[in-house]
Length: 428
Ligand SMILES: [Zn+2]
Image (cartoon, rainbow, N blue to C red; front, top):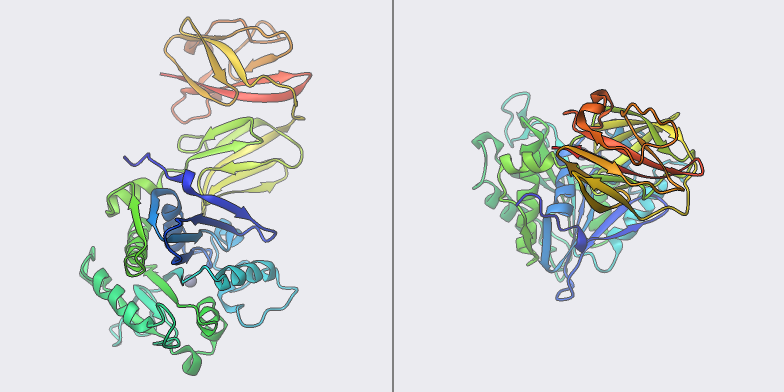
């Protein structure tokens, strides 16, 4: 059940600032919830919740827009803001500020006439209490709150009764707590009169433009990422209920299931000719045939990204380093076969250029005059090509596997000394 993804319903739009906006739309309603994750790079509960919303929820009525990783570069480094606090740049911003393009674009998205309500997801310190009950439980804590800047927008604004909505969210969440001290409350910052810092924030920018906006803060002091994501999703679902946005998710919402789903890193396709399963990949792989420039990394996971350091590509899901690919540079050959004929345990099959296939005993890539085959880890006596040879598990050096179990190996296809594509052979 967990494996069903609803990615087909997503439409992507990428702009100059690199903001990723995912839209799940229906034609039956004008109501749109905008969920923003990752404004602070060290608050993974918020951005992993936004990501799960993108991959594991189908919206069957109404509309959901998701910006899963607003501050991507800070998420990669797991810091609040590499260019300072992004949530303090919504009033005035210096045009030289490195966040200026992102701020300009997210403001446009917030102000889009389609957007009915904005949620900004955070992980906050401690557990908010109206009375001081110690270092973690006190009125200055942000954790486990629904934050509003004021009680009410103008009378006729749909969803403008911010305080009533926040109270409804709080009350329904408090019926579903994992532990009683995780209780939620409404924190009204009374921004206009009392909180100068918050006057620079995303939600205050929204409400001053008459857009209903809330922050959801789960606690940084919760014991696991899964608990934070669980509470974020509970809150978002309550907002969808209030907005009459209908959804189906492909798992039952429990902390255990969230934990399982968080481990699904999906696939990475590079230059349309290599496909890695990121759920089972070694921490370091070398001699990966990449181009010297303009490599296209296409992740199925919304939080997938990479950092290039010299000829190494560090692959991340959110703040988690999944693997490092050390490149060997090749040009990409343009005229390559889309399929290869491969004998798998004695049966010839047409295998797509980037597919993984399963073998019990042995396999053999059938000869194709123009293509040279290199099976990484196979010790060949024929230096030209490793096509036309029966290759068994026993004849491959296990240290060349791409997975930790020593079962999956690379088959690389080259033509005219340029790289074509890579298949994976998976021994059962
Ligand atoms: Zn935050």
